[in-house]
Image (cartoon, rainbow, N blue to C red):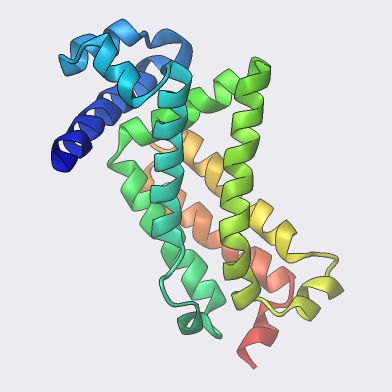
Length: 205
């Protein structure tokens, strides 16, 4: 029974992911998900009270997948390897998203729909960003000594926000105005330039 519930929920989330990626939140109807899954509306509502809850589950799962690619299981392995780590994790994420157009489209639609100013959507985008920032903060605290950042007028929170913003810009343009190779080149250049600017070379002493 538990496996059946798990499998049904996965079928539902996969269908919703495809719909939200291709049509956006407002363009995806529950009827589309019914047709795509072959499930009844009653079954769908048993798992999720409504379309909004289903959408939040899809996007939250997407954020979790991205964080899993970025954050290592063992923080101690990071000591003294800040630049190499950030470059390699960015490359890993770019590689994954290049082959996953649905993931990229989910974030494109999410940004567009939040820009329209719907309060609930704006709040949800802010909560997703806060989740990423909260989970990434210990990683950046492990990589960068606070004193080095303070001397440059930065905090660990500033570094996290910059990291998220740069990656978000790359995601929105990947395979649209820039190729995977160009995205990787841009990522390498920005990370190297930023870390050198804030005194990264001191971390290697």
